[in-house]
Image 1 (tube, rainbow, N blue to C red):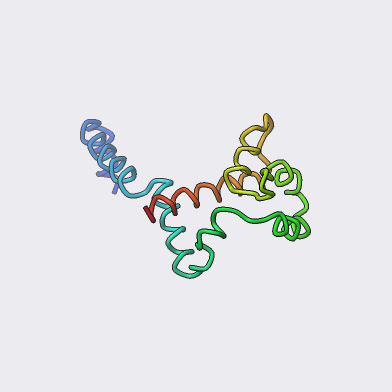
Image 2: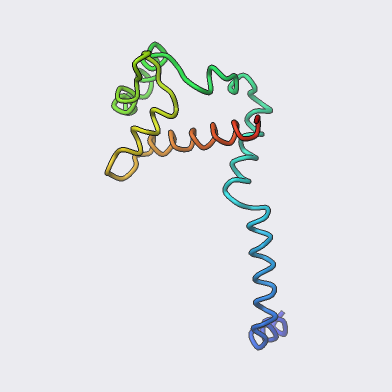
Length: 126
């Protein structure tokens, strides 16, 4: 092992070739998008009912009220995200979260993650 270390320390061009190949492999097979896609497929395989269009796209204010009872910290975001049809979409929540000028709170980061899941699902089902 020490011989290999010494060899690559003394041969930077060969070390850089290995580095470049490793980087190419990571970018080809191990990006954030790859991990999100794998997680989405894993969830979809086990809980296909979660991916029905009506549950993926929006939920009604009644659902919001039930949700807020269990998670009161999200009430401010959800109240701002209600549209004129009395519905809340992931897009409207993301708009509210992105309009803030402060650091993300935990639940806001989760909403952004849900948006990524939604976008990946829509890409895969297109």
